[in-house]
Amino acid sequence: MEHQPFENWILSGESPTASQLAELASHLVFCQHCQFTQEAILGVENLLSSATIESPSPGFTNRFRYLAANRKEEAKRLQSYFFLGGILAATVLVSSGYFTILMLTQSPANLISNLMTNAISLAFEIDELLVALKTWARYVPWPVSLTLGAVISNLVILISSAWLLSVWKVFTRGVKVHE
Amino acid sequence: MITAENTWLEQALQGNMDAFSQLVETYQRPVFNLCYRMLGDGMEAEDAAQETFWRAYQGMKKYDPSRSFVTWLLSIAAHYCIDQQRKRKLPMVDIDILPDEDMPDPSENPEKVISKQMENRALHRLLDQLQPQDRAAVILRYWYEMSEQEISNTLQLSTSAVKSRLFRARKQLADVYQSSQKAELERSLHGTPAL
Image (tube, rainbow over all chains, first blue to last red):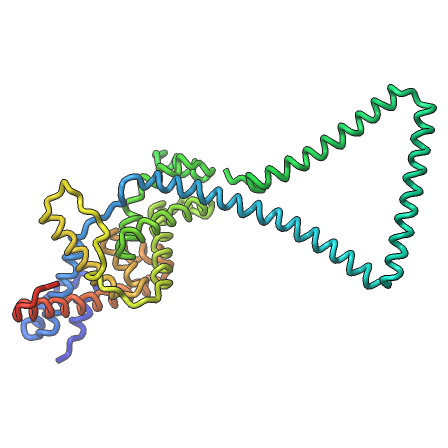
């Protein structure tokens, strides 16, 4: 037996027109297949319409706030690790690149001899610097030297502290704060 | 007109967690219900609903204020649940062999509780037969009374795709319902306990 278009009308979920309804009613009288289909879809729709809207257990919003706080912390921590890891990787990359260039452009013997030459010239330069300092001390009054020394050491301490502070901040709070 | 929701939305867009919490408080029920009907498990539904709100909080900049906020939330929840169901890649588990995930409210009438649980089981057994996207379409149609156009916006499908998915789902649900009715009838005739 032909079940179309009756089956489509039953399953479409749209209300059939008056003429369709009449045709369907006369078809259902002798078609058991469509009758069962209609009964089944009515049963399903009844079940669906009688189902309630389920609620989460109490305290859902608080649990969300806790989850959000944890996720934010996690994201910040991850960001710090990426930031510091990036700096470390860049340092390693630049150093190894520099070392590779040195190894490619100079023989090991040359490299060692250059290193020794540089070390010796550095020692001479330090010696010259000490002589210059002694000369400075002889001609410039000691309060001026002391003030200058204090200014330079303060500057060094200030710059190192700022650097340490920024590293600590990045490590504990992350690079960018969303809120 | 400025409503409380608009104010919360505006503040939440600035990253205000208190305002967003108000939105969570308001919409937790529809979001949880969608997740529960999609996944069929209270614990999984709780996780999915929490994840939905977290994704919404993170993606607030992408929210288009001309759209309804709850529809946007339901869209996030539906997509998340569809992904979760696809990830499972396991055969459908018969709801009968699962432990009861809902703690019955002691103040409720025990008969009511049992009948509600049985109805929920029958419902989940039916919904479990559907493909994730068909299931989402049915849930949005029957629980949230969304039109085909609204479902297509929520699930990012064409209206004709929604129509054919709903048709296919109804046919499948009717078939399963019919066979379950037949099985129940046979059980009652042969006196086998319906366990």
